[in-house]
Length: 102
Ligand SMILES: [Zn+2]
Image 1 (cartoon, helix red, strand yellow):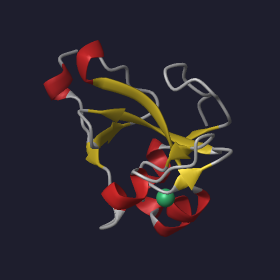
Image 2 (cartoon, protein in one colour):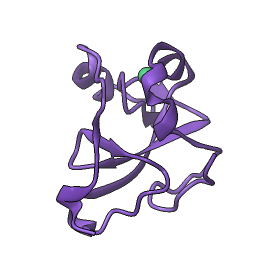
Image 3 (tube, helix red, strand yellow):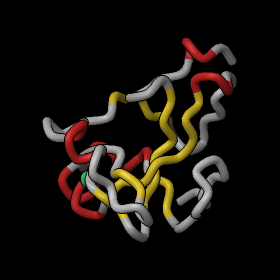
Image 4 (cartoon, helix red, strand yellow):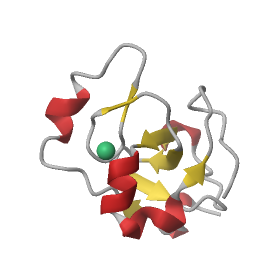
């Protein structure tokens, strides 16, 4: 399937996302929504084109615009119920290896 035929959803970045993501703890990863440190991620989203996400059962055909999975903090999962269909569950320390599907 061509990547332009795949439905994507824009990440609801918070206003302070850029500022927060510049101050992430060395052993943490930035939350894909607010940019704050996530130490032990429980939820992940599959990011493409920088700020868009796709559903877990969709394969992205273009490696050059595939950013792999990024964590979403628990607070942002609660604050953004619209993200629920897009979430992967479970810990995985390697961004480009996909966590298990829900
Ligand atoms: Zn967050």
